[in-house]
Image 1 (cartoon, rainbow, N blue to C red):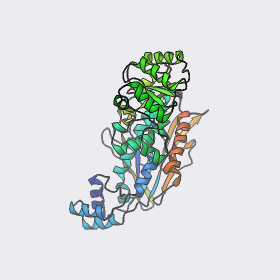
Image 2 (cartoon, helix red, strand yellow):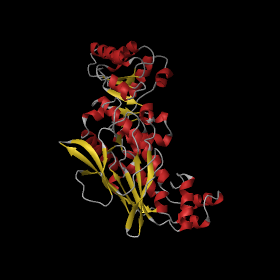
Image 3 (spheres, rainbow, N blue to C red):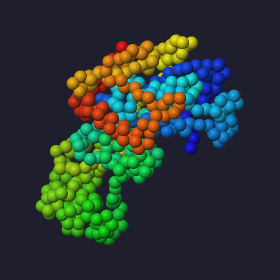
Image 4 (spheres, helix red, strand yellow):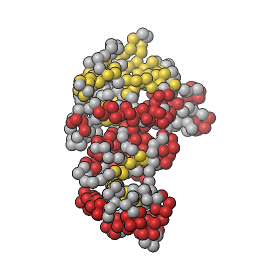
Length: 427
């Protein structure tokens, strides 16, 4: 399905005007970066790259799209003819999906003719802003969980396609599973889920509901125990499933003392290996508050799919250089509070004794920088690099995120407000 109209009108009117002025093929470099991180965040996680490359590949103007643009008089006939043969044939480089980033990091660099590159702006930002916001929030939750498993279960708290994107981003950030079946089918993410309160309320008694679930899913299932009286539900669950009951789930209440009480009851009943999972409007702070509680796993919904209060990462897509003959001319906005730094850039991460200490962005003609080079090839002549696509790309991004976060200084993992974990230095 075409993704060409997942864009703003002014992208096409700029193409229209550039064609008339004869400047539409001027080689240009566009850059995606965030001027700052959300308040209190110390790093961000790049996510959405592999998904974006797929969408760019489908960015075509078919008959239906062209007919609508003609009927609405969005652009003139010359531009419609240009759009009819549109295919991005430029180069895309960027931070590897799963990489950490900071203010000013050029997380994506799109190079091509002005018209073919500028028309991608809205699509690029809609993907990277959302997916990176989810991944950045999810990474904080993973740190707070300190090795305990996390499941993403926020499909009912966002749009239907965003739910799939959020599950993918959270998995890259270190979550272990999702409740969303489409995310499982498309991206190979493990899926989980058993029953909601409605299933218990369907039956005359809680015991009937538990028996029905156990009959289908076996004693290793997870039983939801807070529909009525938790103590009574735990007793019933263990009596019916035996000491091999897989887990109980708690979705309400004052969790720290409640979890401790349930753990003690399970142990007293002989269900010492039965796990406790909690799912009560959790965010990274609530997860951290449960660090000393005998919780075995967490399920997170609203907070993760909304970026824990920041559903967009604040990334922008700016023209930073254009070519005049053989020379690249740096260009940049000078607007108050929105100034940017022009020129082609070559970012590197300086790592000392396994710990990142700075991000240096070399501006201008390329010189071999010292440190870990951050830009990787994502697409050449419009063709995406297969390494970043599909399930393989998700697995690669998940692995890269773990390595990138591991090299951050320990202060980066704190949930309290603070400055970016490492400084961004322009050279």
